Amino acid sequence: MSQTLESPRIDEREAPQSDAPWVTIVWNDPVNLMTYVSWVFRSYFGYPREEAERLMLLVHTEGRAVVASGGREDMERHVEAMHDFGLWATLTKEDA
Amino acid sequence: MIPFAAGVAGITAKFTTAESLVLVDLAEQLVELLEERAPDVTGDVLYAQLGIGGSSAPPLDPALARLLPDAYRGDDDAASNHRRLTEQSLVERKVANARRVVADLSSRDVVLDPVSVQSWLRTLTDIRLALAARLQIETDGDTGLGDEDMLSVYDWLGYLQGTLVEVIE
Image (cartoon, rainbow over all chains, first blue to last red; front, side):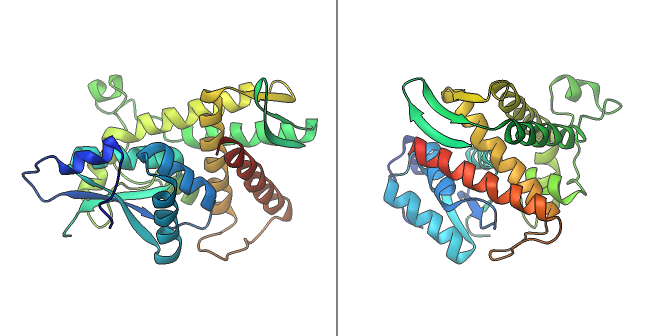
């Protein structure tokens, strides 16, 4: 996934990590509107419009996309937030 | 219905009585469904007091399972542990959102403040997820099986949510 992200939240990924980083994955589903998913990526992660659209399309066409990476606790928080929005998300170790 | 639009008073929509009743009914059904996951009071008292006395197993009902998905895939222990610690607060937030939608529908001229906008977006999504599970809409392109009225409502909710997303863009 692209590392060219601008959100302060996402910058946490650059903090030194003792373990392998974790990633938040959003999975495709047939229910959520493309406009809504894109809006979630912008409003929650702070992605610029183009990046949010790119990630949304990746979810739609590839079935999944990594939308954030970093420490495990942060990724658990992101996954919970995605579940709040009704998006289907999981976290996993990056190399898993 | 006059779909969501930005006005001087905030984000507004106007529903017919029938539409309003359908929305209230669906939001209340969502609350009932979510409350099936109420904490097990016979479990750990401390956890229950902290609001983290949730179940560690995913719901059997496919609609609930979609509303409250596992946070880990292929790691049942991590998924169970995470669910036990977080599911109750997720349920509570979803219920609070749905109740706010019901409260906003006390008038047919709905006016949403920024907090209500967030509740509506999430609750419309949650209702559509639950309906989709009932209609067996599982992959892109599925048009749904079963009750025609439920299918129409599902499509209408999608349209309604689309107008709300458009307005906040």
